[in-house]
Every structure is written in C-alpha cells, then in structure tokens.
Image (cartoon, rainbow, N blue to C red; front, side):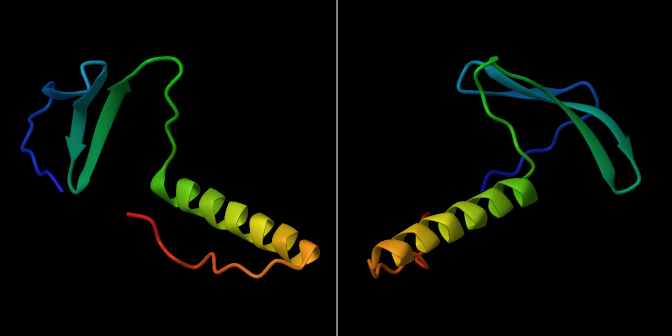
Length: 77
C-alpha cells in the first residue's frame, strides 16, 4: 500500500487520467474529490465487497443446480 501526505487542494494522478484531490479536512474526516474517465467504475469498498459476495453466491447456486462441485472460497489478490 502506498501512503502519501497531501494538503487541502493538493492531488495525485493515477494512470495519467484519474485525479484524487484533497478537498477538505475536518477532525478525523477527509473529503476527497475524484476526476476520472466516464467509462471508469467507482464503488465504495463495502459495496464492491457485497457485490462480489453476491456474485459468488449466485455462481455457487447455479453450479449447485447443475450438480457441479467447485470451491469458490479462494480469495484473489
């Protein structure tokens, strides 16, 4: 994991087309803004994890209906 220190108004650029900018800092809360291509997908981590789990459950249910036994519990890095 990369750690950076940025002040309000400062930003970082990712892959030449994604900008992450510090907009405001209040106590322990940091407001960040993003500029990115229209075709990029952006999700909060907890929502992304929930979608991944639901997708795994759907695949497992489909495989079960087909009588196929595959372990879907391994994590990808």
